[in-house]
Image 1 (cartoon, rainbow, N blue to C red):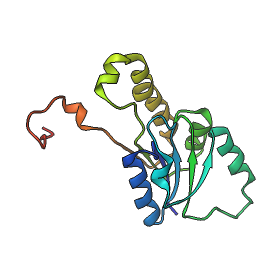
Image 2: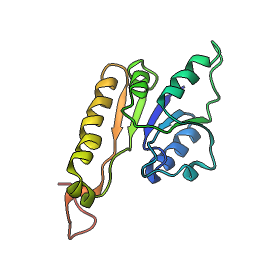
Image 3: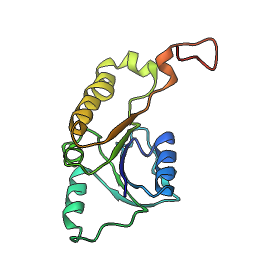
Image 4: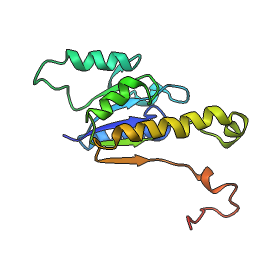
Length: 159
């Protein structure tokens, strides 16, 4: 069974991605700090909500040997994607793929709060990628149209 970690999985894109992955037979864990996420977006899924990464570690330790959880049960960890417990799970090879949807959005906020935006969107992402370097088959990293600036022609060509 393929296992995925979806960062920012309680956001619009992350929640829809999670639903599709579960439908395709993936086992999915979500990590979302809930700064922009909404748990209601997952209402039609079977979820187990954990208040932080240390609870995930304890949950995994209490799983009976040889008795995996149901494929359609989505674990939602309400924490920072760069929490040490989350990164330990990534490093230990708990996931085949990471779908990295978490970020501090909005260009205006990044101009007003450059330190916070840089820490989350760059520094913490590097920590996640370092943990995944030798243990994850693939990382799928989302972006936004904001990388193209104020485009006058839509849709914007990528070249």
